[in-house]
Length: 311
Ligand SMILES: NC(=O)c1ccc[n+]([C@@H]2O[C@H](COP(=O)([O-])OP(=O)(O)OC[C@H]3O[C@@H](n4cnc5c(N)ncnc54)[C@H](OP(=O)(O)O)[C@@H]3O)[C@@H](O)[C@H]2O)c1
Image 1 (spheres, rainbow, N blue to C red):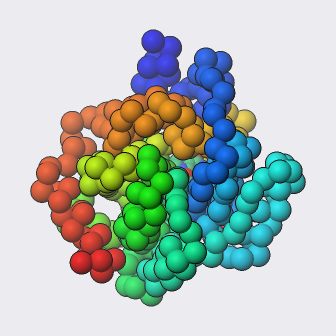
Image 2 (cartoon, rainbow, N blue to C red):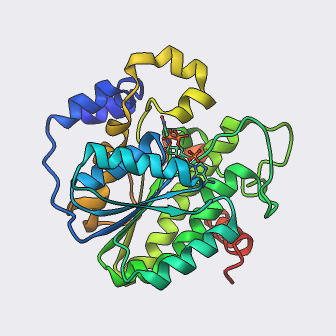
């Protein structure tokens, strides 16, 4: 009951207060020795903390980053915090479809399994820009690139079944209804927070669609939101929010906890396509007017297929 109350009242639940109250009842996680885990966007913030969490459990962790120097710095931090860590750096810009293809090609040529794929890299840009593929940057980074990466790594994931894909969404998606006619925020003046929330809604819908598609191959797909976490991204993109919430924000480890739990624990394997926060499933809508139609969902999937040129 306390858990649900924290969830519905948002403010305490999303902060470190909610985390501390809930974490009192949690079990330790099993060893992940021998499991291969990719965490995208692992140079800092929640991604780096998730990578450290997986390394602590003994997994072979790959930090998927777009900048080699920042990636090596992050790997050094993991090794210094977890001295026996198995950690490596993989180069890939997830907003760039050619980069995603090049990474997937060399990764699948050299690896035999992938146990956990965490789509954590995310952006909230202040202005509308398009990538070299001609896709709006928020949509490219948060939605289309991860879609293509999942598509291209699906065989490796299936080879490690039961395996897991974890999409990092945001509580901000509760405010958004999928606008399938304007997925790339081209109409009217650009509102970065709105564009971001819409991509985070899209991630949750695609989680459900991928879950249906990959279920028979032994790959489960979940999404989660980390709460409000003090990270370089929040400091830069939401400075006022960061200042007002100050010490109430979660630290990166608290924000990453449910990612590591979804990747390691047995309980998440019993379902697929769910939305989680603090190790519990959560509703995907708070109000009826954010609900999308089946036709909207199909159009979102078709747009990702078309933009990532997989069909
Ligand atoms: N912090 C929060 O309160 C909060 C709340 C809800 C959801 N989230 C979600 O949690 C995830 C992590 O958030 P965060 O706050 O930790 O963010 P952050 O501090 O901004 O870190 C974002 C990470 O993504 C990487 N990245 C960005 N674009 C990339 C690209 N094109 N290719 C590869 N990597 C890229 C960044 O790498 P560089 O070093 O190269 O920039 C960085 O490692 C995001 O998906 C975010 O939407 C966060």
